[in-house]
Image 1: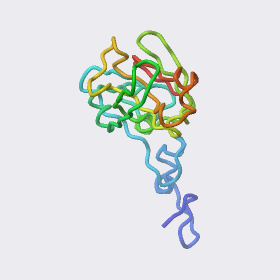
Image 2: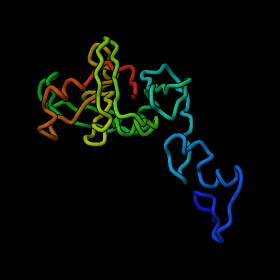
Image 3: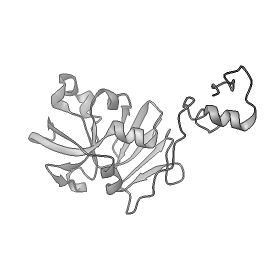
Image 4: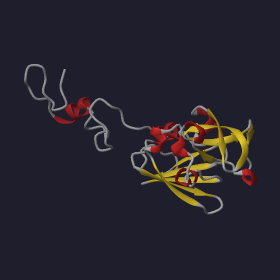
Length: 187
């Protein structure tokens, strides 16, 4: 057994590429910010239908050059989470279903600390990636059980669980809740 420095249990040195690969340092994983024993990021599968979201910037997993493209089934395969919350845009509580943003960030191997969301209507907003670990923010595809069309804030809508924390019921977080989202860029 050899450690990350290539030393074996008897104090000898492992040499060459084999030692680097055994330690995880020669696989490219270390260069990608991963430690010994972790595996390198794999490419994502290509979308089978027209993509509704692209993610670019500081990401490790891609499927179209330097970006990750997702069609609706790909996003749904990441697992859907439901949030029921009041928002400034709808009367009463609304039920949203979508992918946890933390799950999406994990899927693309995001390693930046800021995310800019770009909407079809040219709205942009910058969101700290830390929000996605702090709150169960979702990229909603459905509102009250129905897919959201573009004319009703679809196809994708970043939704915070506003009712779960008084801090979220503020303009700071409302402005981060972009709808008609088509592209995300991690910096």
